[in-house]
Image (cartoon, rainbow, N blue to C red; front, side, top):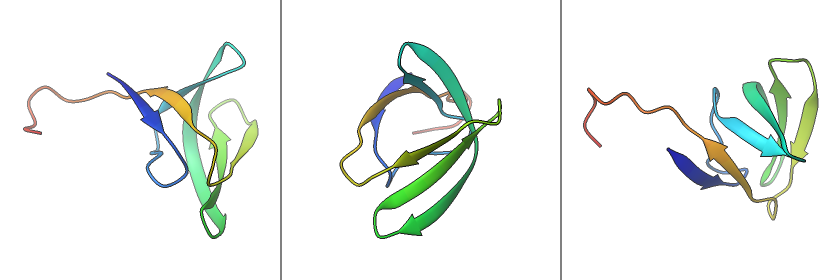
Amino acid sequence: MSVEVDARIVQRDDQLMIGGQAFTVSDMTAVGPGRKRLEFSTGEMFMMNPTTVLWAARRIDPRLRR
């Protein structure tokens, strides 16, 4: 499922599209009010500010109820 994410709702294992390239979030750290530093499985890092909005592919287990 594709969802719009910002620093408040981004999750581990989200696959984000940045510059036409897919990155999978492996870890994240809050670094201030509304800001998160994301670490990707490839080792790159990305800073999300409160106004940063990206599209993410999120895996949802069909056995779980929404």
